[in-house]
Amino acid sequence: MKDKDKIKKLEMLIEQGNSDAMNNLACMYQLGNGISQNYEKAKELYERAIALNNASAMNNLAYMYEHGNGVLQDHYKAIKLYERAIALNNASAMCNLANMYRYGEGVPQNYQKAKE
Image (cartoon, rainbow, N blue to C red; front, side, top):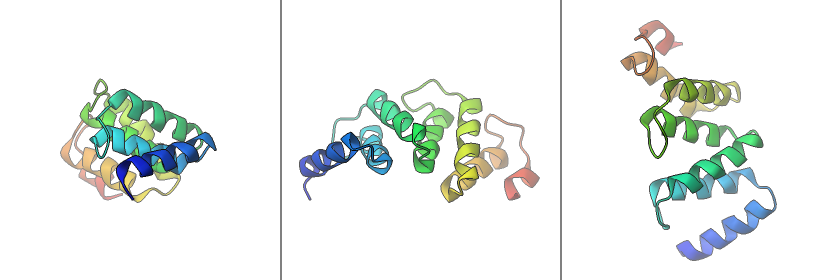
């Protein structure tokens, strides 16, 4: 499927309230994959998906906050979003939060917490 067709399909699904489509289009905007990079639109779509309890969107927005990609770097917001995603069993969020503790990024380095 061509990028334009994929985007149109995602937009149609978003109109129907599909949080996975919101997350997928947000990823495309965040990375500039098949569409012009636009962090503001990515953040907006992630937030809409998060309002629908989408754990992947929580993880992806947390990553933006952790690294300051298109948003002001905010480790506190990143940790809170990772924790919400972890509560929904998102494995990527588990790894990302563990790495923050492992390397002491925005939190005191804590190997024990990283293992948990």
